[in-house]
Image (cartoon, rainbow over all chains, first blue to last red):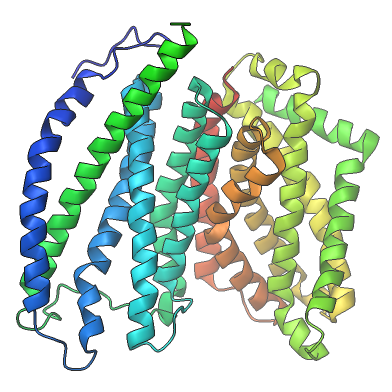
Length: 243
Length: 221
């Protein structure tokens, strides 16, 4: 990947960039794979055993944690994309950061919707100020603010810089917030982790498929959104040049 | 370094001449204290004083937002921000100067606000003072570091007054968690938990570093 040393300031690199075209080529095959995996996932969730204590509601397990991983992945890509954009002045990485923030917010929103449904069924309340829940909610606000910052300041190189800096703040907040949980998180209602054999018989496969499917869905949406952003910049460039 | 001191001095002098920012923040904080009294009429006085550290930090946060917004809104007049950006040397020093000035002004307001809260909610401030001062001082470093980084972004968008709280508040959760924990211990006469101080120090350090390095891109014209 060339770092485009002349690309400082406003000098327009080609849109889509080489990285973007390369990513785009992966999108269609990923879509087919996603359709196939999605079907297998749906089937495995339906045929998974019903939990003896929680009942049918436990099946949210197959979607809730994978959504969380997607959300965090999105936020990390936003932060790292922003840092690389600042360091190397590559606008395609800024476009990646926007795309990733939006997809991450969608995943995070879905997680925050599925969580209370599950909580109502098992904890008996829609919402508890559980440490992990609170931290994720705050992170959701950070990335909503990121998107607001972008939409309030229009599309300009300055917006991209501001957003990149804010993305870095979001990135450092993730470990910081987990540090807060570590210190004050004794009230947590979330299990410590799922891996240590806490999944019952027949629940491993749908959980694994859920993770794979949603990870694939994440990257599919990310690339799609990235393409849209590139197209949008292209349109902006052509209208502003008076074509 | 000289740049930082020059900017600190400039901000303090201009505030001394008008005193409007400190007055606005102070009046606002006192109003918040009064609002809490009316918002929580069902509580007995001793219950209110147990809540006081949380209420105090709510007042601190909102008045700090007011002051931080103003600190850069002022620089927009006559394009002073562009002038600042032209100052020679690393822009991180400009950040430090602005952040230090904000810290001084916000701290003055906080000391006076703490007095008002102590009066209204019956807190015995004198024994709590060393602990409370440490926690509040450290917490405010974090607020000023993050706020001084984000305020110049917020003031240059179309929604300047609205955007700063939206950007800043979710970033201040680690500060708030540590500060409320520490202040509660100080007011209750307990020793301040080390975890709270550690959290404040780590968060302050990280925000100071991010802001020092990132300010270059925020001020860039």
